[in-house]
Length: 67
Image (cartoon, rainbow, N blue to C red):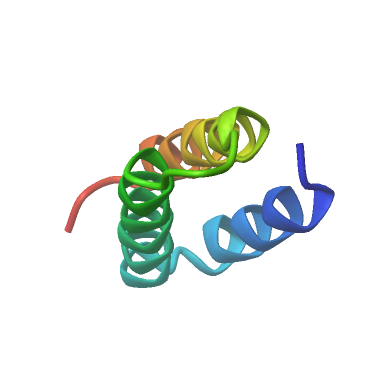
């Protein structure tokens, strides 16, 4: 998994920036949707990476109480 995504999520959690985390999550979900519709290449590795990143982002969001 990407260390950069983990560091970004940790930073947003530290700042309690729920909006930024939600935007990041929406972006990763859109990437995942697009990857799943790709033809002509095997996107499995990218799908796995994005899925792991989504898990990290969701865990970060769980650490911040909803406003």
